Image (cartoon, rainbow, N blue to C red):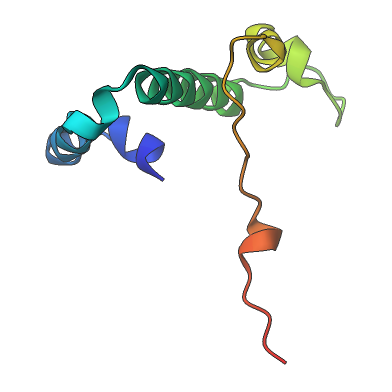
Length: 94
């Protein structure tokens, strides 16, 4: 949730997000790595969303749009990040 705020076009939101990330509890090496990996992933996903799909075809691949995204996710040192899906965020009442 914080990654969309850190790249916000509103300076006040960016400052508040930076304040949260500057908390001393996030200065531990594993947390710094996790935040760094989340930031890299967010940047690649933003890049992916902004890429035009060339041609008249209705299908394409992630690799053809952003070559570095699959490599980033497959990297041995990249943190294990679970992506939220809207389907799993729905509340189901009996």
